Image (tube, rainbow, N blue to C red; front, side, top):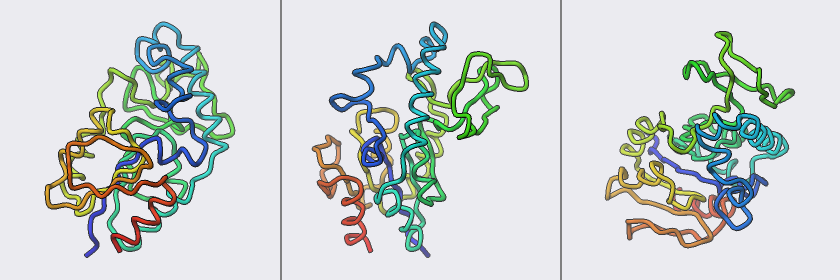
Amino acid sequence: MKKKLVVLTGAGMSAESGIATFRDSGGLWEKYPIEQVATPEAFHENPELVLEFYNIRRRELLKAKPNAGHYGLAALEKDFEIYIITQNVDNLHEQAGSSRVIHLHGELMKSRSTGDESAVYDIDPEQPDLHIGDKCEKGFQLRPHIVWFGEMVPMMGEAEAIVRKAEVFVIIGTSMNVYPAAGLLRDVKMNVPVFLIDPKDVSTNRYDIHHIRKGASEGVEELKKLIM
């Protein structure tokens, strides 16, 4: 029986693939204030700006490729029952071959109806932009399938249940400052080994974490040596 390995990934996971981070110096929040592009109020007040912000992100994603860290996690499926819980809205984990991925903050390559949250659609990579006037079959405007600030995180309950069953827990490239995702560490049982892959210091409420001070690609390679 394979061990359950649960991995929580953040922006640092995809940084090596050229995906812009939000909180680092020079990150997206310095160029685009949260209030203007990542809240329901922003979409109500200036939907054109919000749609274009995510159109730009989508075009960037379509040029990006998974890095060695993404491929390394996918390869671990041979030896572990691995679940990836990601705060990232890109699809690089899936591109690399990971089969169990939970997106806490939504998915950039999907849209959904503003009038029916269950109406979610894949976005055609050949026509990746969303525009005013793009509507679902019920006539409601489409919006990015993204969890904006102030909105509920619908996949949180499923993520918490998976973390409680973890036999190994790994954190990669996240500041552990964004809630509710950062609270998942509290759901890890105390006897479960926890690994943190990040070149920077990350503040947590646990003192038994093995910190691998490397980026995602090198860090996942070292993780394999420690858990195999």
